[in-house]
Length: 316
Ligand SMILES: [Zn+2]
Ligand SMILES: [Zn+2]
Image 1 (cartoon, rainbow, N blue to C red):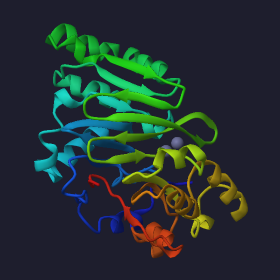
Image 2 (image 1 turned 60 degrees about the vertical axis):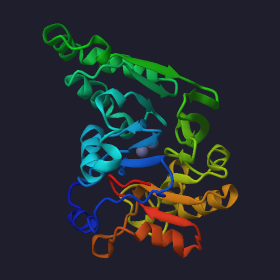
Image 3 (image 1 turned 45 degrees about the vertical axis):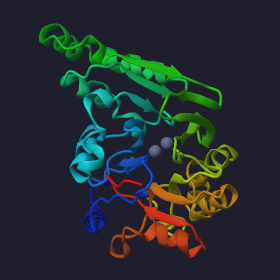
């Protein structure tokens, strides 16, 4: 099975430039650094996001390409992001779960800023297993770390990372800019998946992570201003490259991700105002593909709320 032949998808993907859709009156912004999933779409980096509160970025997930995508986002939105995305500010990261598509950029997040003598230790929040991951990434790169530290005189704090594991829902982080609450979600077969709800001085924004419909997700999104949601097409599931009969494909995907009808249910129960799709899986055949296909499918079910299909470097 080849996974590198979806040229038509890729050509049609770029029908617009990244945009800033955030309400102008709000200082809290969410940057989509990676709108993709494990599929190797060269135009979508792996899942990663930044919530900007009071001029400080709080990163959520570290998918493939996070470091380069930060740079690209700054070039598209210099007025908003140049003062924010400084070496000193690359500090806080929250992992929704430990699937590799959400964490494979961790070595880059930890070590690329260090190449340029970033001054601070990183603070990494995540489920059980986060300490193991952080510790072993640093161990794996000890030759590189040692060379930069001992031979170039870089600040030794710059390569360090403090893991903060948690296993109970509730407030897991708080500072002058933001309060972060974690809500347990369900994303088979992992036991430890979390949605993050950021409350700032002017917005409540929720990064749902991957997961199926579940009570924790509804709670996380309750009354929020903005929700970034992982959604999979139901209309085009027959074209999914895995599973057997259509019924098997539906059963399989329902354990991992939201179908459009699940998203509608969450929106209805939570009253969230604005929804942005991420981690999209549309499965449209090449000759029918268009980038807004999945959100049109959601609208077709009667969605009457603000709904966006994100691309990398959009701001919401
Ligand atoms: Zn994922
Ligand atoms: Zn996942």
